[in-house]
Every structure is written in C-alpha cells, then in structure tokens.
Length: 77
Image 1: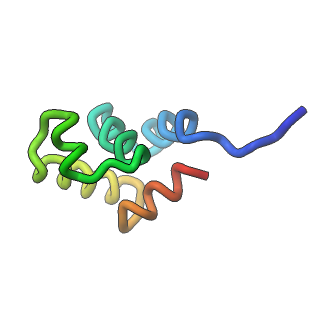
Image 2: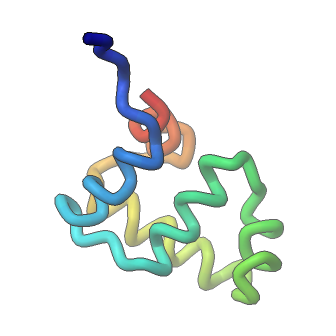
Image 3: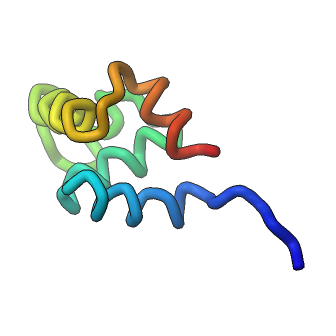
C-alpha cells in the first residue's frame, strides 16, 4: 500500500462540495492552478477581468483564504 498526498484533481471537487464553489469558480481555480494570470483566465473563459476578480473574491470568502497564493497552496498539497 502506498499513501500519498491528494492531487488538486481530487482536492478541487471535494473543496467545491465542502465550500459551495460553483462550476464557474472551479474553472477559474483550475486555471489559477495551471499558473495563468487573471488576464489569461479571463481570455480563456471569455470573461471580463472584473468578472474573474469577482470570482476570486467569492472563492476567497467561501474558502477563508486571503490570496491567490494561499488558495493555490491549499489545493496543491
């Protein structure tokens, strides 16, 4: 038996259920985990920069983190 840390592919769906993260917010998080900048996330999802930033604010509020780095770190363990 091997025990290892869960990947973000496992952690993100679990966090979505636990914290009530919407599917669109999950898409934003996935792209943040891939290292994309806000402008790139907006372009890839066909959203405005303001909308992406609003999604981040909602995600931070729901998860209790204060920054993108903290969010990525918590889902990259």
